[in-house]
Image 1 (cartoon, one colour):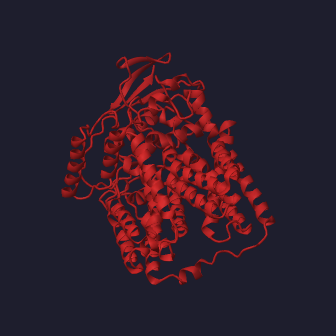
Image 2 (image 1 turned 45 degrees about the horizontal axis):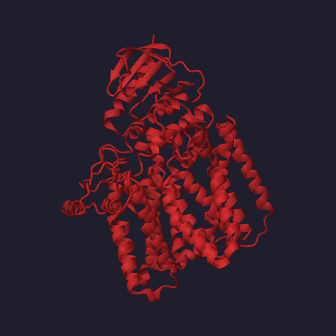
Image 3 (image 1 turned 180 degrees about the vertical axis):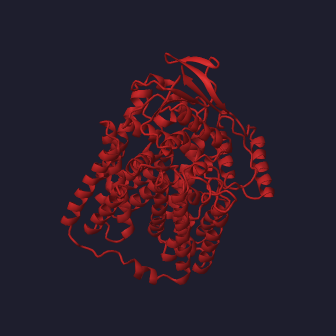
Length: 631
């Protein structure tokens, strides 16, 4: 299977790191470096293929084949300096309590793996732009921007979708797309356990750190999703690990890993700018303190690698919108319209409140406290200048959803650990834990001070919560290892409701991912499932239409249309946005004459309209879907 080529390439890259004895003191560093090199190679292959119009199955397979052959050649030429890691002996030496924690964590990994493979992607953002942009890339065999009603398909950071594009092209379906975040989750667990070790945690603390990160509700939910929050969290964990490694033992491999992870984090999600800045600032200051001008070379290397990975996407944005970050009319919607201490306190309180949602009495108390704070400061709790569009601050109930779920238990464990460490400072081997905590707090303050508050911010906090696991790994130094293991078991047990009540991928309800058709799992919104399926059936069976125009001015779900057409096995088909009125309308596109238009709103002009020089008439309607046929 061609889908195995990227996985085999990753394995060979890790073995090369092993053979060349890079970071001889810990196998996890080699795994993370292998991941970073693999991510950079995937970026290079995707950008190269997309720039020359060869972003398709066979060219990508050939590219991965060449990477694999080159890797095998380097592997053969690498000296056998170290034996492979003896996992069995390490596991046998673990205390029984830590073994139980790892066993529970393995069950979570296995359960989420099954869900990721069985369930169709159905996340809102994925249906609107994450996966839709992948379909346009593969259709056009290019990463070039195209006319679209949904500008987020163009300018937002694309690395996770690069992986999706490779997997979809090589497999011909979306079966493996959820695995991107699943593997990111597994890598994150390895990374935070290593981060805990760097901060001074023993074996029990490292296990607890992995359990803390792996039981975060958002981690569990996103390990089965096609979003990108867990992926950016993984790259930021790697960034912190390589930064600490290089500060302790300056190493060119660590600097390369740091630069690659910085670039991949930024290429994955824009929040990486805010969360990575404090960590990099601490790294740069400490490097300067230790080596003065000698720090310039690694800093230039790190910045150069990060910029190199992002340069093509920056260039496309700059050419289309005049800014490397995207169109100003869209990006300004995310940031506060004014700044200051009041804005910071307002957003800080509202963002923290998202992680305190639990049972009804507590929710009312927290909501009242936040509202009272705003009244005391004479601020509007729903100030439109610091609040996303029509969102209103209200804490109703704890919802298990990959867009909204907070982490009240984990927040309490983290705060308890900090308080305990503050009273028992002499037990710490070094002060790195406080430096990391300060960096996380600075990242959170930047986040709250810069971005408008949104109801779904809880998922954007995931990188900070995951990184805090490194500090939680020091909990056995605050309380006994026995009670730390009890805390870990409690966190493991707390994941059961997350699995059971998962709204997007139900497991045991009357309708669930195991007994529903895959297309109905994908179109999880009940108001869309019948109109979309029947609309596509009408286009195919009645109209025999394979050239479909899209009219989605309200940024409605697009990806299901692609997947329904693919599942119908109609042969070659083409889907393009029409009637676009935003800045992307001026972008070039191959000549296209749709035989019908799939619209989520009525076309301007009534039932008979003129669009792009052709006449169309309304022939089918099932709200919100309307189909206009060419006359």
